[in-house]
Length: 221
Image 1 (spheres, rainbow, N blue to C red):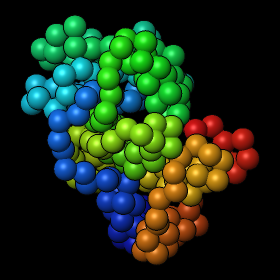
Image 2: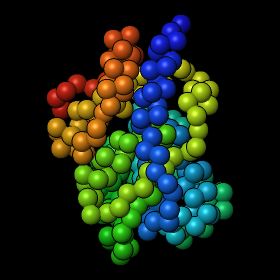
Image 3: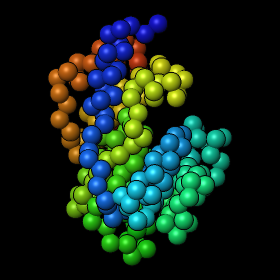
């Protein structure tokens, strides 16, 4: 049974992880691979709304996506976008990235090789990964303007869509830990963490929501 305090703390982290950027047209949209096909749906919607003339889907497979997306996350995302009416000419696929840093580096390389001039990036991720993706992109692609986006969804909706409330809270805690650790390891820029967020994180961590934590040394980003 999850306590009222833990639910309240989880909502604090959920809100913090989202950048609340105002959407605007960008040079390219980059959809970060994961188990969530909603990223592809959102990328397709933003393309149709004229927010980017080109989409890059990036991602190989992981233990959580290997069975569901055997051809690779980016490939399945592309197929989903085409089903939703995005023309194949507007989609590039980067199918080797296995973490957020590789998502950014390999997408950047793909666009450079394709001769695409990138001044701004519409970075599409899962809702609770917005800030992590933003901080990583600002570190690895500092000269490019980054706008974060995700499927518009409130916390309770996302919990219902996943069907495992403890796992969702674990993911929120894990994402916050990476924001604290990874700037020191050179993986992303540092982000200010308000006291309210830090205290919520510590309470959840002390409460046992720890399955998505990484070790401080040699962490995979």
